[in-house]
Length: 130
Image (cartoon, rainbow, N blue to C red):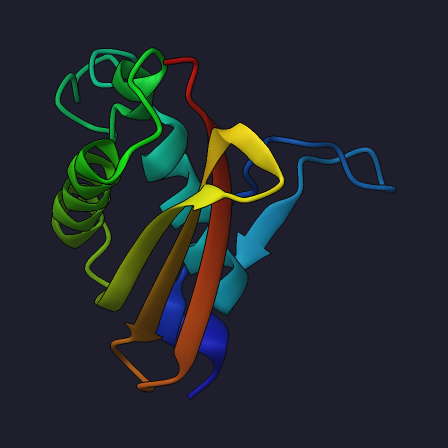
């Protein structure tokens, strides 16, 4: 069974046009990663007909870059990825202050693909103004 069959396919995120002039599709494991990024970067209320979809990370924009904020970010990510991306199981979500940028928090998501148990990792930087 191919990865495309296991994990599906969808319009690439962010949407882009390929060399052939057509919209790019993502397949297999790439589709899962792009789906995760879409969940993380979408604010609830942005999607018509799915107003509760998305992680809502911008609500932390003006929060202080402290462990309490990191815990709330961790919980939001865990809750929303678990809810909206059934093709993964989350092993760990790490959120910590970026030592090189005092206003940034580094997010690292360690996960497994449910169908194959293959480990994966996704990183994200959040700028916190507080």
